Length: 454
Image (cartoon, rainbow, N blue to C red):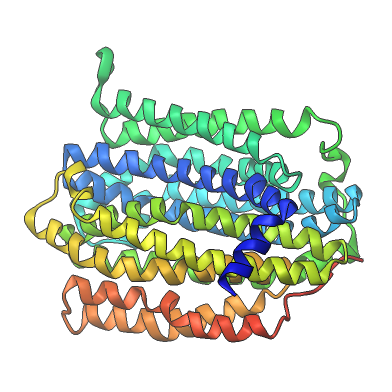
């Protein structure tokens, strides 16, 4: 059976081409974004542990915004990919307009919250006055970049839908390189520039987001075949809007519930002290770097299967789904090995106390198990299930495994039972590992094999 799977997969040139065209560039984009976070952590961590921990906690707000926008874009990709399979540009443009409007609203609210209440926002994640003060300085500048996030990500989503992932990768590469270079210049004060520390990291992020926005606008509008109809930005199609909202609500609900849960995990560890917060900050960098390819595979899976479902090729979509699920497990095992290899290497890049270094080693072993479940669930749930409109499963599984199991245990361990850092961190990893059997059972029901177009 293994030989048959490999032979059939490797001989399917169309599948491999789509996987390489979509999965690899999306994975590269995720890698580049992760490198920005890594550069912030490493450069600030080389100055002092508190700057690294504070900025990591501050960016949890951006993390919530990014995942909220990702949920909005996921709904766009679910329907947009199927209408692209039917070559219905009018419907794609209408869906894009809805996506852009909602993403812009989310970005505006995030910007205002971080600009007006930065110290209070930091209080969500830590009770350390030192960390809250550092994070406040970062958010006052970085908040302006949050205003652009929803707009630029919606435009890049349009490029992905038209399979122009190469341009997305180029834009991301330029933005990331600029961000990292500016990080070095402004954090350390190279070439006669002032050493700005956390303010420098925030200014670098803002500058990179402005450049990314300009390039995304040009890339989307300079080709007529994918240029959205501006007149539809404020138009309304009742039937299509109803279909969009039907996909958006469970997807956005799942993304929000998951994102707030992940931020709660960071808050628990942030309240366990500065050493625990620093160790968790470094582990987040390792996790984001390690899961880049998996996220690319999930993004590619959503569009690949969506095209087939919209074209009426349900059997081909089923075969592609099986291949992608197997590949997700293989990616998970590979990712786990990368995490284990990072244990002796990552602490060398930053300045950690002895206690923080020990915490990092312990939680990294747990992280190595976590990424296997995260890889499988990401591709199958967020890629395959979502592509056919089977979006409620993700929300149900997150509520049960994260909010009814993992978060209560982590909360008790942090605030009432005085558990060690590794034990609380283990609780935060229960959701992805526990979902695997549930996900397999639901996958075999094939409820995700649906054509959603009108």
